[in-house]
Image 1 (cartoon, rainbow over the protein chains, first blue to last red):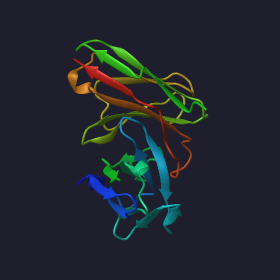
Image 2: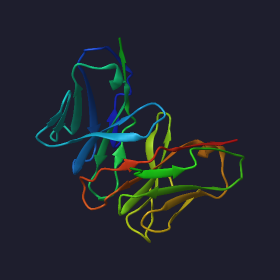
Image 3: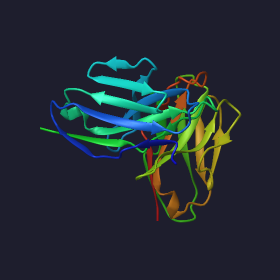
Length: 111
Length: 114
């Protein structure tokens, strides 16, 4: 089983739609969680960290469910500019420095 | 506002050739990393360095060597390139002090080995 698993998509949604991605992780001792965004042929960039209580940044909401070992990302009122690949990233905790990256979920927002 | 700088951006090698990918960060970070990204595989860690003078293997170290020249610079060397090393290579850095640390990435090097 992969340490971090994501649905690869693609998710094709119209502008204005709400879309949600889930990600599961295998190590119950995992310490911290992130969503990164990667545009085509670009480097990954942090979208948001995911906190136990859940957190929101504008149209983006991240949730963590430790009991079921999954993380979610909700995007409301999708924009064309949200088209990208979203990477679920986990620090498994056994080494402060290492992150485990999911393979990414591709989102395509159409007019 | 440079952040993490990688050179070169593109490179084509013939099988058996050697080359060094350069990476430098100006954020005074302790930790630096080299990843490769292949279609359907996600980012895989090749080597990392938790501090100046230390390096450790990641998930896919075979065929690569690294040098943490100083706190700013972390280079990746391919001694004898193979077609299987065709990939996009990313360097990253982080403060390296806590599990909540964010990694910051360079723009990547697209390498083709013929």
